[in-house]
Image 1 (cartoon, rainbow, N blue to C red):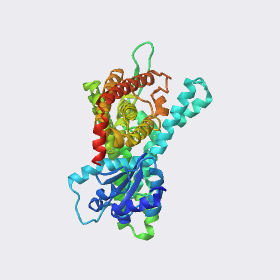
Image 2: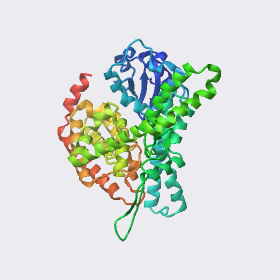
Image 3: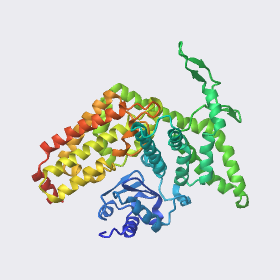
Length: 490
């Protein structure tokens, strides 16, 4: 890999996960190649770890190969070697005829990886809109642009597009995951956020009109958003949600498979989509969609209740253990919960504060090791890892190469970030858009509706406090002699 032969690495990975025929789906995040396999028993994790990658692990039926900053190039080579295409339908046998029944443990263990596989492909769009919002906020707060300028007004609705049409983006990814025709999955998502349906939902929910002279005026709704075949349609709002459409597309996978068996081949092109919509419109809008919407609200309410009950202890615990959540690859699973909670609190007080504080502390720990060590290679790794943590927001190199490896820097970072998160919890810090945690996305903590920078100032204060505590503790706890022993043991 001296010349970074991505094709060779991709081929080796394919071999170690059981070959092309064992791959159902593949995606990647910022540092990991994520491969959903059909039969996990064919995956050789020990051999994967010997391929010169940072690490490898199994989460449910998903293999996570931790590669680092080269993951986009490896992913492209992986697609070329496997023949998988981003928009192409996957093997019809995804659900299996693998000769073994899935246990309850298998099913439960695959739920989160399944949700993640439906979100990962759309992360570039979410990050783009989040970064765009941060960029516009910088221009406004540096007075390069006026908050009332037409340009800001235009970009304000532009960077909200990905989040409003989130079900459509998720549907495109879920279609591939569940072997559904992309057009049909996207059509179902469009139905759930169509303007006419949104108007019916608003009428069903009722409206509240502010009254400066007294209490707001409440206009009661009709209680539903119309009906279909006699079934009342629950007035759920599906924009900014992911669970309802994932559940709908999951069901569509079974419906399409059944219809393709029943409908004669000569009539499938016309009648399969027709019958599918005749089934999914009432089932999706009256049953499955509302269940998904209620689950999203329930998750948000439960997490909100936990944060309100435990107060600043909740973000402290979450942030302290965030490195291990990241190491297991489950940090993106929190996205669905954070989105649900954001729908309740109007800002993300869960994942983004924890991510930013974790990055700050990890970088501080790596910097302390770099400045204290007498080992040239360790110093170079520490400096590059600190830069990676703070600027692009990539934490795996530092965690695998420094903090987790030498233990005491990890302990110091957990304490430092935890104290920063406790203070942040007291301040109720939250972000107002999604995006990777790095130096350039700090403006995500600016309230776009009011321009208020309170959350931005508070998160910076907490990051500095957490970083200083981490640096001091790492300087005290870290010993070069212990690190030498760890390196000697391999």
